[in-house]
Length: 193
Image (tube, rainbow, N blue to C red; front, side, top):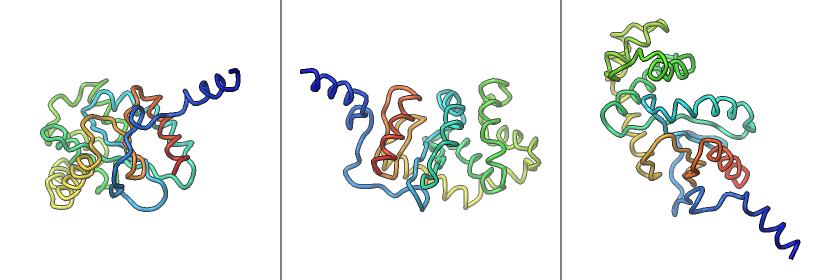
């Protein structure tokens, strides 16, 4: 009985399909190409995403070189679409990496962003050298609108209905109950891949 008990204990820590993650019946297209992709569907207007971000920052630094981490903003309508447009516009204008963490702070700590309107979001980026009119034009442009539609399709195909949600290599959606557990399950699925 002792070996059986030890084996059961070891398996208890292993993530379980259907409990800790969902296996897609057919692999979904990944957001980018190359390596094993871990994509986070997130929103700047999501307090849980803001809470997850510091853990994610530390975790990303430890990823193997063949793992590619990608942010995919949620496009669930309303403010979600606005913040997704802001992400894609910041990316297009080359300031996304400088503004990603500060925009969470602007929403949830400093309360500088209150409504999440496109105008309010555009004004946030002026502190990073981006003219608000240029930001608005980029947010409303064809390229950003196309990416917004693609992000919406990505989330729908993966069955994402809340944020933050991690998708691993277009094959798995993590459903763990805590941020720490989500990262542990992601590590397990990366190894599986």
